[in-house]
Image (cartoon, rainbow, N blue to C red; front, top):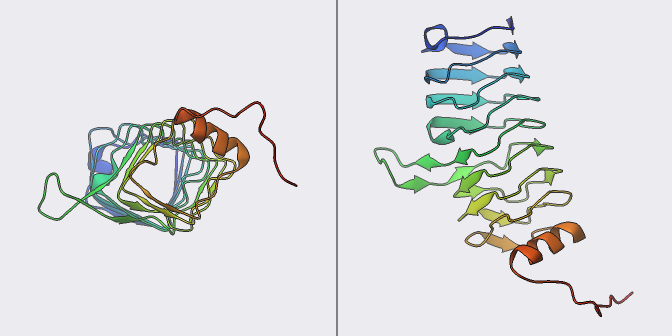
Length: 198
């Protein structure tokens, strides 16, 4: 089913399952999305900004040019989603252990795509990004808190003031510009008499 230019209410969506639906230029309610399953759905230029999610799942969904800023994903199950070209500034990716209001658990996001996504100011907590390729992603002022970034590629990304301090790093890739940005954020500067071996 195709939904175009719709402004949804909580009552329109609560408790429903959507399978292979297409949403184009749709606005979703900020008051809360509860007990909803989206499977193989596409969201093109839709607006989820400031939405509150409670027991919502997105499985194999795509969010091309959609707005998902100021969203806390603690109430969302995410699997194999394509967030390429989405605007996701100042979000929080975290999951709470069942029955807990504060204990965090790991989130596996290795099967998600993040190409040209705006993730500036976003916080990732206990996220597994092993071997994930971030392509031309804006990660300015993003925070990776206790994430697994082994063999993760950040080539071509903006990482000015990005915080990786508590995360696992190993064979993590940066291009030269990213390397300089990261060094500058730690107080390093490039020596004027630096030479590179050829």
